Amino acid sequence: MAARQPPPTTAPRQTSDFDAVIVGAGFAGLYMLYRLRGLGMSVRVFEAGGGIGGTWYWNRYPGARCDVESMDYSYSFSDELQQEWHWTERYAAQPEILRYIEHVADRFDLHRDVTLETRVTAAHFDEAVNQWNIMTNRGGRVSARFCVMATGCLSTPRVPVFPGLEEFTGSWYQTGRWPHTDVDFTGQHVAVIGTGSSAIQSIPIIARQAASLVVFQRTPNFSVPARNRPLDPAYERRVKASYAEFRRQARESRVGFVVPANEQSALAVPPEERRRAYESRWQRGGLGFAAAFSDLLTHAKANATAAEFFRTKIRATVRDAAVAEALVPTDYPLGTKRICVDTGYYDTFNRDNVTLVDVRNDPIAAITARGVRTQAIEYACDSIVFATGFDAMTGALLTIDIRGRAGRTLRQSWADGPRTYLGIAIAGFPNLFTITGPGSPSVLSNMIVSIEQHVDWIVACLAHLRARNLDAIEATANAEETWVAHVNEVANATLYPLAKSWYTGANIPGKPRIFMPYVGGVGAYRKKCNEVAARNYEGFHLTG
Ligand code: FAD
Ligand code: NAP
Image 1 (tube, rainbow, N blue to C red):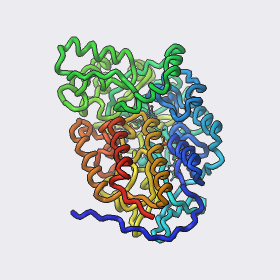
Image 2: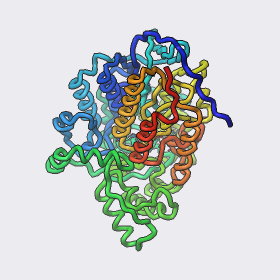
Image 3: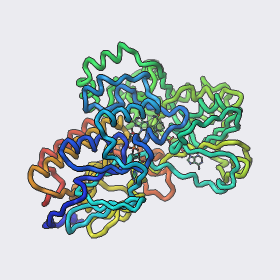
Image 4: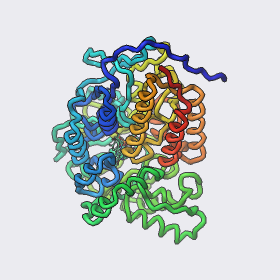
């Protein structure tokens, strides 16, 4: 198929309201703002929420916490910042992360360029003058040479679609849109729907508060203990003494933080040695389990040994054998859905006030005035918590009416699934950048490492354009085609596509099934991006 190349641009220069508009004020949008200011650009950030912080502004459910260690999950761009900030725990909780983001915004005076409570509804590229016209839900309209979508991969929660919700006489909550006032379940009968990471973090806490808790599980997840604890001061001192080297290693790693990796196959060692390796990771706690052997995510038999280790742990923890069996994942390889990180999750099912309802064979049919009804039984409750996930990676982008060359919409371009060049740019959409877009390592990594890498790359690219008096950059269709093929090829060499996960869009009815993130690893991806830049932005058309 002949690839369409963008026509050379001879558009007259026109003054835009801003050099750049950024959509979203989470970690990505705020760092983008900081760096673009450094280039001397005029910038406006639009944020739908009533505050900055993105994920950590919206997800205030009980137990919301990072699953990447706090010394890793933080900005690296300012040594003063990383030296002065003190994390209190191994894994930071949501309020502390939000305080950190507010601290960063104050320290670097970012608030003044952020417009809150303003949702971008449309972004249309005007080919005649090479600029984006951006419309908001408040009737605003601004123009900008560049538009950066920092809209987040997990920022569009799935709206509960159960029939009858409007009849429910109790209160209901969504983990991804948690109220900003205290929610107290004391003495209540509570239902939680879902058993993903958000549910697994909140269930143990809700169970301790509520009179009773019913957990509706459709697919069991693999969860590893967090072993959270106060941050060890000696560890903090050690990291701070060589933070630059610590960050360098993270940037070059596979997932954006360093875990001891074992280059052996799980099948190359005797069963007892394998068990010891798994046990030591289990005792260490947190992510990094998948690095216990080199082939856990590429070899089904190797993976099965790790999955069986988890099952043994679940059976050993949960006293009721039938409940334990229901909690045991069996129908997808370990790690092909994001491994959850918990504090006391499985043990919660030993409590007298907690009931597990397996809805695989008896799905939730409706919400009634009194509670949740499966096809067979009605469960009365005072409150329902929907922990039902997100329209991940593409949801926030496709909610905006984005139109590129010749008025072609992003929805049209992505009708068969998202297509990008490097997860950063899209053919037919000049001067538009996506931070941690589909086709980048994004959600498979420590996202702050990926965010900083993307932002730094985009800033270098804009500086390059300016130095050459250019005003437009666009991915070529050829480069996009080649990148998409590479992303698919790498994913298909792993076990990831075997799970019905949000990585593949399988959690959203009708969403095209494509493995969206890039599995090639953060370090390798960074190299590739740097090579593209060094070759005068190979795969892009630069014009002006
Ligand atoms: P976000 O934080 O999602 O920010 C995007 C912002 O854009 C949002 O505030 C949103 O309101 C705004 N926005 C979207 N569309 C529009 C629009 N049209 N107009 C205006 N504003 C808009 N990652 C990790 O690496 N480690 C973790 O431990 C981890 N834990 C997580 C826990 C939870 C509960 C969730 C949901 C995600 C977690 N993540 C984690 C992923 C997390 O999303 C990223 O780490 C990071 O916070 C993403 O930052 P961001 O700025 O790219 O996106
Ligand atoms: P999720 O992993 O997509 O989980 C959603 C849950 O809702 C699943 O158990 C799903 O079941 C269930 N569900 C959806 N529709 C249902 C229905 N109709 N009936 C019954 N169950 C239904 O979403 P999440 O828990 O919000 O996590 C999303 C991602 O955010 C994570 O993978 C992670 O990347 C990030 N996150 C991280 C942390 C952390 O530890 N730091 C915490 C929260 C979130 P099925 O599996 O059967 O579809």
